[in-house]
Length: 392
Image (cartoon, rainbow, N blue to C red; front, side, top):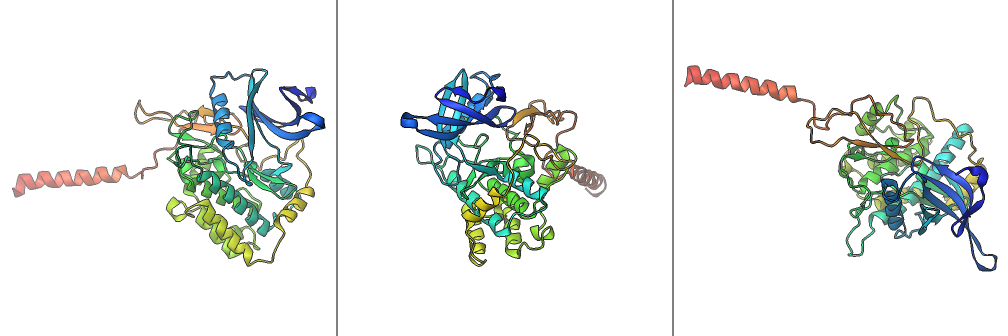
Protein backbone atom coordinates (compact mmCIF):
# COMPACT_ATOMS: atom_id res chain seq x y z
CA UNK A 1 0.00 0.00 0.00
CA UNK A 2 1.35 3.41 -0.95
CA UNK A 3 1.84 5.72 2.02
CA UNK A 4 0.70 8.62 -0.17
CA UNK A 5 -2.85 7.22 -0.03
CA UNK A 6 -3.01 7.59 3.76
CA UNK A 7 -5.03 8.24 5.78
CA UNK A 8 -7.77 6.02 4.39
CA UNK A 9 -10.54 3.69 5.65
CA UNK A 10 -9.70 0.04 6.35
CA UNK A 11 -12.70 -1.93 7.52
CA UNK A 12 -14.03 -0.18 10.62
CA UNK A 13 -10.65 1.47 11.18
CA UNK A 14 -8.80 4.32 9.50
CA UNK A 15 -5.15 3.76 8.62
CA UNK A 16 -3.22 6.89 9.60
CA UNK A 17 0.41 6.11 8.75
CA UNK A 18 2.74 3.17 8.31
CA UNK A 19 4.97 2.46 11.30
CA UNK A 20 7.04 -0.48 10.02
CA UNK A 21 7.27 -2.94 7.14
CA UNK A 22 9.06 -6.22 6.61
CA UNK A 23 9.13 -9.36 4.51
CA UNK A 24 5.79 -10.79 5.67
CA UNK A 25 3.79 -7.99 7.23
CA UNK A 26 3.49 -4.28 7.85
CA UNK A 27 2.31 -2.28 10.86
CA UNK A 28 0.14 0.82 10.71
CA UNK A 29 -1.00 3.40 13.19
CA UNK A 30 -4.78 3.34 12.92
CA UNK A 31 -7.78 5.06 14.41
CA UNK A 32 -10.86 3.35 15.77
CA UNK A 33 -13.97 5.52 15.89
CA UNK A 34 -17.23 5.15 17.78
CA UNK A 35 -20.33 6.99 18.87
CA UNK A 36 -20.31 10.61 20.07
CA UNK A 37 -16.92 11.36 18.55
CA UNK A 38 -15.11 8.51 20.36
CA UNK A 39 -11.65 7.83 18.90
CA UNK A 40 -8.84 5.51 19.93
CA UNK A 41 -5.42 5.00 18.39
CA UNK A 42 -4.39 1.38 17.79
CA UNK A 43 -1.70 -0.50 15.86
CA UNK A 44 -2.71 -2.77 12.99
CA UNK A 45 -0.43 -5.57 11.81
CA UNK A 46 -1.43 -7.01 8.44
CA UNK A 47 0.18 -9.53 6.16
CA UNK A 48 1.11 -8.46 2.64
CA UNK A 49 -1.55 -8.88 -0.01
CA UNK A 50 0.64 -11.35 -1.91
CA UNK A 51 -0.10 -14.07 0.66
CA UNK A 52 -3.18 -16.26 0.41
CA UNK A 53 -5.16 -17.47 3.45
CA UNK A 54 -3.44 -20.88 3.24
CA UNK A 55 0.10 -19.46 3.35
CA UNK A 56 2.31 -19.81 6.45
CA UNK A 57 2.48 -16.05 7.21
CA UNK A 58 -1.30 -15.91 7.56
CA UNK A 59 -1.37 -18.97 9.82
CA UNK A 60 1.45 -17.42 11.85
CA UNK A 61 -0.48 -14.16 12.22
CA UNK A 62 -3.55 -16.03 13.41
CA UNK A 63 -1.49 -18.02 15.92
CA UNK A 64 0.10 -14.78 17.16
CA UNK A 65 -3.32 -13.21 17.67
CA UNK A 66 -4.74 -16.23 19.50
CA UNK A 67 -1.73 -16.36 21.80
CA UNK A 68 -1.32 -12.64 22.44
CA UNK A 69 -4.99 -12.02 23.26
CA UNK A 70 -4.64 -14.39 26.23
CA UNK A 71 -1.57 -12.59 27.62
CA UNK A 72 -3.01 -9.69 29.58
CA UNK A 73 -0.15 -8.12 31.52
CA UNK A 74 1.14 -4.54 31.97
CA UNK A 75 4.49 -5.49 30.43
CA UNK A 76 3.06 -7.17 27.30
CA UNK A 77 1.59 -5.33 24.31
CA UNK A 78 -2.12 -6.17 24.28
CA UNK A 79 -3.98 -7.65 21.32
CA UNK A 80 -7.60 -6.57 20.86
CA UNK A 81 -8.92 -8.14 17.68
CA UNK A 82 -8.29 -10.47 14.75
CA UNK A 83 -10.16 -9.47 11.60
CA UNK A 84 -10.17 -9.49 7.83
CA UNK A 85 -10.73 -6.57 5.44
CA UNK A 86 -10.22 -6.18 1.70
CA UNK A 87 -9.15 -9.82 1.58
CA UNK A 88 -6.31 -9.25 4.06
CA UNK A 89 -5.97 -10.69 7.57
CA UNK A 90 -4.85 -8.34 10.34
CA UNK A 91 -4.59 -8.06 14.09
CA UNK A 92 -5.42 -4.98 16.14
CA UNK A 93 -3.00 -4.22 18.96
CA UNK A 94 -2.37 -1.65 21.65
CA UNK A 95 -0.54 1.39 20.33
CA UNK A 96 2.40 2.26 22.57
CA UNK A 97 3.18 5.95 22.20
CA UNK A 98 6.97 6.00 22.33
CA UNK A 99 9.97 4.24 20.79
CA UNK A 100 11.44 0.78 20.72
CA UNK A 101 14.67 0.23 22.64
CA UNK A 102 16.66 -0.12 19.42
CA UNK A 103 15.76 3.40 18.33
CA UNK A 104 16.68 4.72 21.77
CA UNK A 105 20.08 3.00 21.61
CA UNK A 106 20.71 4.30 18.09
CA UNK A 107 19.72 7.86 19.04
CA UNK A 108 21.90 7.84 22.16
CA UNK A 109 24.81 6.45 20.16
CA UNK A 110 24.43 9.30 17.68
CA UNK A 111 24.64 11.75 20.58
CA UNK A 112 27.58 9.82 22.11
CA UNK A 113 25.56 9.23 25.26
CA UNK A 114 24.81 6.13 27.33
CA UNK A 115 21.55 4.66 28.57
CA UNK A 116 21.44 5.36 32.35
CA UNK A 117 22.73 2.29 34.21
CA UNK A 118 19.92 1.96 36.75
CA UNK A 119 17.29 2.73 34.13
CA UNK A 120 18.64 -0.14 32.03
CA UNK A 121 18.28 -2.46 35.03
CA UNK A 122 14.70 -1.24 35.52
CA UNK A 123 13.77 -1.77 31.86
CA UNK A 124 15.02 -5.36 31.79
CA UNK A 125 13.38 -6.13 35.14
CA UNK A 126 10.07 -5.03 33.58
CA UNK A 127 10.76 -7.12 30.47
CA UNK A 128 11.46 -10.14 32.68
CA UNK A 129 8.15 -9.67 34.48
CA UNK A 130 6.31 -9.76 31.16
CA UNK A 131 8.27 -12.81 30.02
CA UNK A 132 7.63 -14.65 33.28
CA UNK A 133 3.90 -14.08 32.90
CA UNK A 134 4.01 -15.48 29.35
CA UNK A 135 6.17 -18.44 30.39
CA UNK A 136 3.68 -19.32 33.13
CA UNK A 137 0.59 -19.09 30.92
CA UNK A 138 -1.66 -22.15 31.07
CA UNK A 139 -4.01 -23.48 28.42
CA UNK A 140 -7.71 -24.31 28.79
CA UNK A 141 -6.79 -27.62 30.41
CA UNK A 142 -4.70 -25.93 33.07
CA UNK A 143 -1.41 -27.16 31.59
CA UNK A 144 1.57 -24.91 30.89
CA UNK A 145 1.37 -23.68 27.31
CA UNK A 146 5.16 -23.90 26.93
CA UNK A 147 5.55 -20.36 25.58
CA UNK A 148 9.04 -19.25 24.57
CA UNK A 149 9.15 -15.81 22.92
CA UNK A 150 12.30 -16.60 20.83
CA UNK A 151 12.69 -12.98 19.69
CA UNK A 152 13.57 -10.94 22.79
CA UNK A 153 15.50 -8.04 21.27
CA UNK A 154 15.66 -4.23 21.50
CA UNK A 155 13.34 -3.96 18.49
CA UNK A 156 10.65 -5.83 20.43
CA UNK A 157 10.95 -3.87 23.68
CA UNK A 158 8.65 -0.85 23.49
CA UNK A 159 9.20 2.15 25.78
CA UNK A 160 6.46 4.73 26.18
CA UNK A 161 6.56 8.44 26.94
CA UNK A 162 4.58 7.56 30.08
CA UNK A 163 7.47 5.38 31.23
CA UNK A 164 5.92 2.00 30.41
CA UNK A 165 7.98 -1.02 29.28
CA UNK A 166 6.28 -3.63 27.11
CA UNK A 167 7.47 -6.74 25.29
CA UNK A 168 6.00 -7.02 21.79
CA UNK A 169 5.72 -9.40 18.85
CA UNK A 170 4.89 -12.98 19.80
CA UNK A 171 4.83 -13.71 16.06
CA UNK A 172 7.42 -16.50 16.26
CA UNK A 173 6.80 -17.56 19.86
CA UNK A 174 6.95 -21.29 20.48
CA UNK A 175 4.03 -23.02 22.16
CA UNK A 176 2.93 -26.63 22.48
CA UNK A 177 -0.22 -25.93 20.46
CA UNK A 178 1.23 -23.79 17.67
CA UNK A 179 0.29 -25.12 14.23
CA UNK A 180 2.11 -22.68 11.94
CA UNK A 181 5.57 -23.84 13.04
CA UNK A 182 5.49 -27.63 12.64
CA UNK A 183 9.01 -28.31 11.43
CA UNK A 184 11.95 -29.18 13.64
CA UNK A 185 15.53 -28.00 13.20
CA UNK A 186 14.41 -24.40 12.62
CA UNK A 187 16.43 -21.43 13.81
CA UNK A 188 14.04 -18.56 14.50
CA UNK A 189 14.74 -15.10 15.85
CA UNK A 190 17.44 -12.46 15.52
CA UNK A 191 20.90 -14.00 15.56
CA UNK A 192 22.45 -11.34 17.80
CA UNK A 193 20.15 -12.16 20.72
CA UNK A 194 19.82 -15.95 20.47
CA UNK A 195 20.77 -18.36 23.20
CA UNK A 196 23.38 -20.98 22.24
CA UNK A 197 20.73 -23.71 22.18
CA UNK A 198 18.53 -21.55 19.95
CA UNK A 199 21.43 -21.07 17.53
CA UNK A 200 21.87 -24.87 17.47
CA UNK A 201 18.15 -25.34 16.67
CA UNK A 202 17.78 -27.43 19.84
CA UNK A 203 14.56 -27.76 21.89
CA UNK A 204 13.99 -24.59 23.89
CA UNK A 205 12.50 -23.68 27.23
CA UNK A 206 11.95 -20.36 29.03
CA UNK A 207 15.65 -20.06 29.94
CA UNK A 208 16.41 -19.26 26.30
CA UNK A 209 14.45 -16.00 26.74
CA UNK A 210 16.39 -15.34 29.96
CA UNK A 211 19.62 -15.55 27.95
CA UNK A 212 18.28 -13.12 25.35
CA UNK A 213 17.19 -10.69 28.07
CA UNK A 214 20.75 -10.83 29.41
CA UNK A 215 22.16 -9.92 26.00
CA UNK A 216 19.75 -6.97 25.70
CA UNK A 217 20.78 -5.82 29.19
CA UNK A 218 24.44 -5.99 28.09
CA UNK A 219 23.68 -3.79 25.08
CA UNK A 220 21.64 -1.27 27.07
CA UNK A 221 24.51 -0.94 29.55
CA UNK A 222 27.30 -0.68 26.98
CA UNK A 223 25.54 0.96 24.04
CA UNK A 224 27.25 -1.52 21.73
CA UNK A 225 26.28 -4.66 19.85
CA UNK A 226 27.54 -7.76 21.68
CA UNK A 227 28.50 -9.74 18.58
CA UNK A 228 30.22 -8.41 15.47
CA UNK A 229 30.87 -10.72 12.54
CA UNK A 230 31.44 -10.43 8.77
CA UNK A 231 28.91 -13.13 7.86
CA UNK A 232 26.11 -15.25 9.28
CA UNK A 233 28.27 -18.31 9.84
CA UNK A 234 30.79 -16.39 11.95
CA UNK A 235 27.94 -14.76 13.83
CA UNK A 236 26.32 -18.09 14.65
CA UNK A 237 29.65 -19.46 15.86
CA UNK A 238 30.05 -16.48 18.19
CA UNK A 239 26.51 -16.90 19.51
CA UNK A 240 27.09 -20.60 20.17
CA UNK A 241 30.25 -19.88 22.16
CA UNK A 242 28.29 -17.47 24.39
CA UNK A 243 31.37 -15.39 25.06
CA UNK A 244 29.92 -12.39 26.93
CA UNK A 245 32.50 -10.05 28.51
CA UNK A 246 31.50 -8.09 31.62
CA UNK A 247 29.68 -4.86 30.72
CA UNK A 248 32.13 -3.00 33.00
CA UNK A 249 34.94 -3.95 30.62
CA UNK A 250 33.24 -1.64 28.09
CA UNK A 251 31.70 0.94 30.43
CA UNK A 252 33.50 1.60 33.70
CA UNK A 253 30.53 2.88 35.71
CA UNK A 254 28.65 -0.44 35.49
CA UNK A 255 28.67 -1.94 39.03
CA UNK A 256 29.95 -5.49 39.68
CA UNK A 257 26.49 -6.73 40.65
CA UNK A 258 25.20 -6.02 37.12
CA UNK A 259 28.25 -7.80 35.70
CA UNK A 260 27.25 -10.81 37.79
CA UNK A 261 23.59 -10.65 36.70
CA UNK A 262 24.56 -10.48 33.02
CA UNK A 263 27.02 -13.36 33.48
CA UNK A 264 24.42 -15.58 35.11
CA UNK A 265 21.70 -14.76 32.58
CA UNK A 266 24.02 -15.51 29.65
CA UNK A 267 25.66 -18.69 30.96
CA UNK A 268 26.27 -21.14 28.12
CA UNK A 269 24.77 -23.97 30.19
CA UNK A 270 21.10 -23.18 30.73
CA UNK A 271 21.24 -24.91 34.11
CA UNK A 272 23.60 -22.18 35.33
CA UNK A 273 21.23 -19.36 34.39
CA UNK A 274 18.47 -17.85 36.48
CA UNK A 275 15.86 -20.57 36.91
CA UNK A 276 13.23 -18.25 35.46
CA UNK A 277 12.72 -14.65 34.35
CA UNK A 278 11.10 -13.74 37.68
CA UNK A 279 14.33 -14.55 39.53
CA UNK A 280 16.29 -12.38 37.12
CA UNK A 281 13.84 -9.53 37.74
CA UNK A 282 14.23 -10.05 41.50
CA UNK A 283 18.03 -9.82 41.20
CA UNK A 284 17.73 -6.55 39.28
CA UNK A 285 15.22 -5.19 41.80
CA UNK A 286 17.57 -6.10 44.67
CA UNK A 287 20.33 -4.11 42.97
CA UNK A 288 18.05 -1.10 42.55
CA UNK A 289 16.99 -1.11 46.20
CA UNK A 290 20.55 -0.35 47.34
CA UNK A 291 21.07 2.36 44.75
CA UNK A 292 20.00 6.01 45.09
CA UNK A 293 16.23 6.03 44.45
CA UNK A 294 14.97 6.96 41.00
CA UNK A 295 11.51 7.64 39.63
CA UNK A 296 11.97 5.14 36.83
CA UNK A 297 8.80 5.85 34.83
CA UNK A 298 9.30 9.61 34.92
CA UNK A 299 13.00 9.38 34.04
CA UNK A 300 12.32 6.96 31.19
CA UNK A 301 9.62 9.23 29.79
CA UNK A 302 11.89 12.26 30.07
CA UNK A 303 14.70 10.42 28.28
CA UNK A 304 12.41 9.54 25.37
CA UNK A 305 11.07 13.09 25.12
CA UNK A 306 14.61 14.35 24.53
CA UNK A 307 15.22 12.02 21.57
CA UNK A 308 14.31 12.71 17.94
CA UNK A 309 11.64 10.48 16.39
CA UNK A 310 12.61 7.87 13.80
CA UNK A 311 13.04 9.30 10.32
CA UNK A 312 12.87 7.80 6.88
CA UNK A 313 16.66 7.74 6.82
CA UNK A 314 17.23 5.27 9.64
CA UNK A 315 20.51 5.07 11.51
CA UNK A 316 22.80 2.81 9.45
CA UNK A 317 23.95 -0.39 11.14
CA UNK A 318 27.57 -0.60 12.26
CA UNK A 319 29.90 -1.96 9.55
CA UNK A 320 30.31 -5.70 9.05
CA UNK A 321 26.98 -6.51 10.67
CA UNK A 322 23.99 -8.38 9.34
CA UNK A 323 21.07 -6.02 8.65
CA UNK A 324 17.97 -6.33 10.81
CA UNK A 325 14.28 -5.50 10.46
CA UNK A 326 11.23 -6.58 12.43
CA UNK A 327 9.86 -9.32 10.20
CA UNK A 328 11.32 -12.61 9.14
CA UNK A 329 11.08 -14.99 6.21
CA UNK A 330 12.54 -18.47 6.00
CA UNK A 331 15.35 -19.49 3.66
CA UNK A 332 16.83 -22.97 3.27
CA UNK A 333 20.61 -23.17 3.54
CA UNK A 334 22.75 -25.13 1.08
CA UNK A 335 24.17 -27.34 3.80
CA UNK A 336 25.74 -30.76 3.31
CA UNK A 337 23.45 -33.27 4.99
CA UNK A 338 24.93 -36.43 6.57
CA UNK A 339 21.98 -38.56 5.45
CA UNK A 340 19.46 -38.12 2.61
CA UNK A 341 16.58 -38.26 5.12
CA UNK A 342 17.83 -35.47 7.38
CA UNK A 343 15.78 -32.29 6.85
CA UNK A 344 17.69 -29.11 6.04
CA UNK A 345 18.06 -26.49 8.72
CA UNK A 346 15.94 -23.42 8.09
CA UNK A 347 16.93 -19.92 9.10
CA UNK A 348 14.54 -17.04 9.65
CA UNK A 349 16.31 -14.02 8.14
CA UNK A 350 15.29 -10.66 9.47
CA UNK A 351 15.54 -8.88 6.14
CA UNK A 352 14.38 -11.64 3.81
CA UNK A 353 17.63 -11.73 1.83
CA UNK A 354 19.03 -15.20 0.98
CA UNK A 355 22.36 -14.48 2.64
CA UNK A 356 22.93 -18.13 3.53
CA UNK A 357 23.11 -19.38 -0.03
CA UNK A 358 26.59 -20.53 -0.96
CA UNK A 359 28.01 -21.41 2.45
CA UNK A 360 27.93 -24.69 4.31
CA UNK A 361 25.72 -24.91 7.36
CA UNK A 362 27.65 -25.50 10.59
CA UNK A 363 28.30 -29.09 11.52
CA UNK A 364 26.76 -31.01 14.38
CA UNK A 365 27.27 -29.83 17.93
CA UNK A 366 28.96 -33.15 18.75
CA UNK A 367 32.72 -32.90 19.50
CA UNK A 368 34.91 -33.16 16.42
CA UNK A 369 37.18 -35.94 17.73
CA UNK A 370 36.19 -38.83 15.46
CA UNK A 371 39.80 -39.39 14.35
CA UNK A 372 40.83 -40.06 17.96
CA UNK A 373 38.33 -42.88 18.33
CA UNK A 374 39.42 -44.33 14.98
CA UNK A 375 43.05 -44.37 16.13
CA UNK A 376 42.17 -45.96 19.49
CA UNK A 377 40.07 -48.64 17.77
CA UNK A 378 42.95 -49.41 15.38
CA UNK A 379 45.44 -49.82 18.22
CA UNK A 380 43.08 -52.14 20.12
CA UNK A 381 42.48 -54.23 17.01
CA UNK A 382 46.21 -54.63 16.37
CA UNK A 383 46.74 -55.60 20.00
CA UNK A 384 43.97 -58.20 19.85
CA UNK A 385 45.35 -59.78 16.68
CA UNK A 386 48.87 -59.90 18.15
CA UNK A 387 47.61 -61.56 21.34
CA UNK A 388 45.67 -64.19 19.36
CA UNK A 389 48.67 -65.02 17.19
CA UNK A 390 51.44 -65.08 19.77
CA UNK A 391 49.95 -65.11 23.23
CA UNK A 392 46.99 -67.46 22.96
